[in-house]
Amino acid sequence: MTHKPTSPTPTRGALDALAAAIAEFNTSRPLETSIAVALDTLRQSLDSPECSLWLHTADGLVRTWVAGEAQAAEAEVDAALAGTGEAHGVRAVKVIAGDRNVGALVVRLSRPLQAEEGLLLTGVANLLAPELAHAERSRQLEVEVAARTVEIDRERRFTEKIIDSLPVGLYVIDREYRIQAWNRKRETGMQGVSRDEAIGRTIFDILHRQPFEMLRREFDEVLATGRIQEYQMESAASGDPRTYRITKIPMRLGDSAVTHVITIGEDVTDWREGQQRLSQAEKLAAIGTLAAGVMHEINNPLATIAACGDGLGYRLEDIQRKGTEVNKDLFDYIEIIENEVLRCKQIVDQLLDFSRPKQLAKSPVDLNEVVEKTLFLMKHHGGFKKLTLVKDVEQTLPVVPRGNAEQLVQVLMALIINATDAMGSHGTITLRTRTGPSAADGAIVEVIDTGHGIARAELSKIFEPFYTTKAPGTGTGLGLAICYGIVQDHRGRIEVDSVVGKGSTFRVLLPTIEW
Ligand SMILES: Nc1ncnc2c1ncn2[C@@H]1O[C@H](COP(=O)(O)OP(=O)(O)OP(=O)(O)O)[C@@H](O)[C@H]1O
Ligand SMILES: [Mg+2]
Image (tube, rainbow, N blue to C red):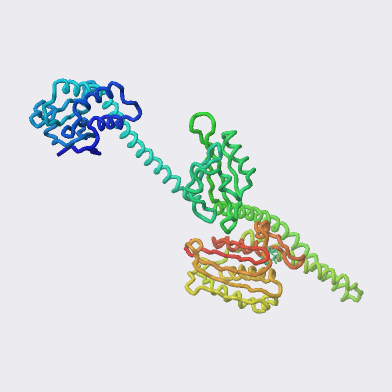
């Protein structure tokens, strides 16, 4: 192996190159004047095209040089260091710092080295020792810094990967509201902003949709109090209205003031709908229990009223038969009593159906058949006949293993009558069946109308018994409550999508697994 200069510049004097090399080793400190003087003296003595002078370090790397042929075999340098190299015109002096060999100053000369030159060489080597040691330390430091940088970079990428893998939107701002972190989730979607675009800019430059003052107040609150803030936000920015849970978390780099705020945005729409369904189910169950109790109590007096009505009727007929004229109004009153009692009884029965639907025998049911039966029954319904019917049934629909076809016809009929009522004299009603996404929601039947729709605020009430928007005498508000009870009894559920002015979709989802 040969030692080659890193940048041989044969035209320059060897010592200039050496001085430059030393300067290059340690640019932060000025080259000691004494070294410069010694080098200058050596330069005057040695400077000639046949002479070359170089320095190499303990690890064998040749650092720089020289005039002339700046090259020597390693063996030659070793021989020179051992003091036996002079025959090849190579002389070398170790550069020793403390007790460490940090390099060698090597000279190749066609003539013998004079004693003073040898001394000068040793002198320069001694002067160079601390410089070289320092340069070596710097180099070691550089290597350490580079290794640490790689390590930090790796850790940073690891942390970035973690926050990118989170299924929530996350960003971090500092006290100047400048974005310091921005995760993958915040880059995606319709509201997505790329990380490169976001980092370093203020949050107000990026989140235009939220009022500046409000956003600033939210951050200031966390920065000032150091307390976690949590709230929910509705947004339709990505199309459908979604609910987000926003959490702002204070972060401290030292141990005193809050230096950053971490914001996490989580889409909790499904969770919230689940919660609402649950509380709706609980509410309806409570109403059901209450209704059942009340209705049970009402049943007995109703029966008494009905019996008294009957008794009165017989008495009046008796009196009439015996020749006494009876005012016709009295018969009308009795008829009214009987009819009203009958109406009350029907309502009571319906309510009892809702609170505890009759546990009728269940067997495998094909929802497509339920659709057919319902349509057959609806055939003569006045309002329904005027509407356009679209039937979109899936032939490969899985069977509902435990169902009561009659009750399901009752559900579908109630939904179709509601749809008809919502449309007036024209519109389209679509009956659709399809396979659900899971066995729990395995078979789906939908009643889709183009009616007036239901306002968002009303949606949570429509399944409550007696909730109706229909004129007195036209609706009791029990239709959907009964549907709800029956579908519950089938371990299924009802979903509603509705847009005011556009129409509604009532979706019954039934399990296709045995239970
Ligand atoms: N398809 C629909 N489009 C618009 N509103 C609807 C629809 N279905 C139900 N609703 C609303 O929900 C309310 C409750 O419906 P529900 O079937 O329980 O009672 P009702 O139809 O008013 O009376 P009933 O069914 O007892 O005759 C209705 O009064 C109506 O306001
Ligand atoms: Mg109804």
